[in-house]
Image (cartoon, rainbow, N blue to C red; front, top):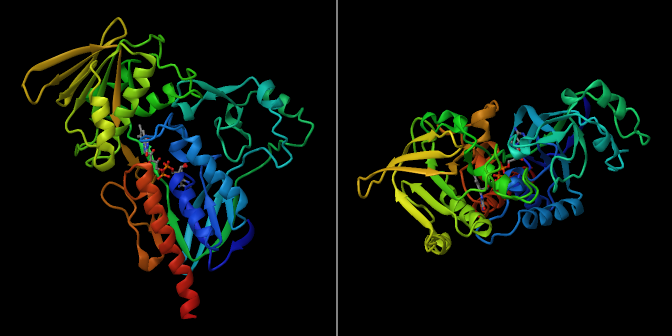
Length: 423
Ligand SMILES: Cc1cc2nc3c(=O)[nH]c(=O)nc-3n(C[C@H](O)[C@H](O)[C@H](O)COP(=O)(O)OP(=O)(O)OC[C@H]3O[C@@H](n4cnc5c(N)ncnc54)[C@H](O)[C@@H]3O)c2cc1C
């Protein structure tokens, strides 16, 4: 265990996605010490996986890069990647938190020359691209990774790979690194642990695992991204067919008591956004959107209206009952039009399941002492100096998550000041 760090005016932010970054920066920029921990090797969270952001349709690098620059300049923020919270003891104003830091196997001597990354032949499934391609065992997590540091997947290394690593002349590799723990003292804690895509394999009737032609909306983001597995070309995984027809299946597992009982608020907007990706590449493709309700409140209405003018897009109010895989690689979407009662069987080259956002702690396990609602969203407990922010608190878009992360930062700062005022 290394030395204790932090002070009773420090704030711990758990999760380095857009919400955690926002909360950390807002607190640090008014003078609080912040300890920011992220379980992945780099910051940015799910936003880094998006091709473009609605409503402005800019690449996520726009928003993230500004935050990385602010973090770089701010000495009040101490960032730990590959790190999770092991235990929390104490109370508001005086928490003692034990962090667990996984080994990166790359030291601060690494010159990021990339020599070992190209010489080591081993690869493993690339999680960032949802396993649609492979990544080297010595890797930068993705194009925009911050911090820009390599990481090694020890389990994926062969004898030959290990030998190549031993050739590093800079002392940049240490395969003897082990898990470390570190204790920090903080006044309050912001949980910004975000979301995971709902597991599409659990939705039996949509047969996600039965065909390469059935993908999720997050897979579509990676297919459309220039840094993705197909360099941004939207093609059917498996046979690389350019799709002439695409169906979007809204509320895939959402608003359904057998899966996610709530609406994730962004899936309709994500589909309208992805229609734009398709139109740019395939002006003549037929698009079918199967929905229960189209929810694009407030400022997003105009975005929806513009996409609904698309003459080659058909909107069908009806829940999809089944998706059948065909021998030629296509799939047939089966639904009933709730307005005309007509039974529909629409064959398409690609079906996109608009799966919702599930709080990550609902899948990874709720840390001891945290309060959640029935779906696993973390509930703030101001009297304890514990706050939730972003999609850990509520499924939402980036604007809403940054707003409530700023609010969480303010509440956390108040806890740090209370001690000083009372004392
Ligand atoms: C298909 C799709 C498209 C979307 N497109 C848009 C869009 O165009 N515009 C828009 O505004 N919104 C969009 N969204 C929503 C957007 O992705 C979220 O608003 C955003 O990711 C929320 O950020 P977050 O920081 O709360 O969570 P996340 O992005 O999930 O970040 C959470 C971070 O916490 C880390 N973490 C998790 N558990 C732990 C732990 N125990 N310890 C340490 N770290 C942990 C994670 O590794 C991650 O880095 C889209 C969502 C979907 C599903």
